[in-house]
Length: 150
Image 1: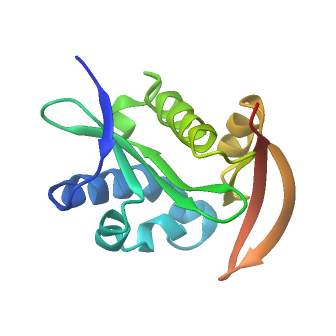
Image 2: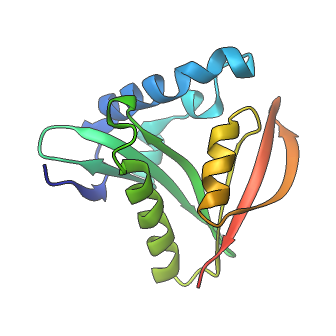
């Protein structure tokens, strides 16, 4: 199966939302409410050209939402369908985000995750991200992380 990362289209919305539902639903009980990515407006994100999908010819396995700022690239969301867990799809999307940031000339890439998603924090730490601070935003306890790009 040949996978490629491409800009998302409006035709991808249903699959993106299905991935979000499958990937984030397990966290609802742990957090006490739906995680922020489950509340996002993906049509708006796609129209803003912020979403890139990992796809073969039939289906999407994951996606990443990247937001340009003046100082850094924000990795706003990355999600992989649980059906593809452990197959390197998340790593491929993360590497794409970092490559995109470098090519755009950003010195750093930043992200945040809910502090209850401890496995995500551990994964990002293994990938070279460092915690910069923790805050409560919109009723969610978030861990902000950053990676200096070389």
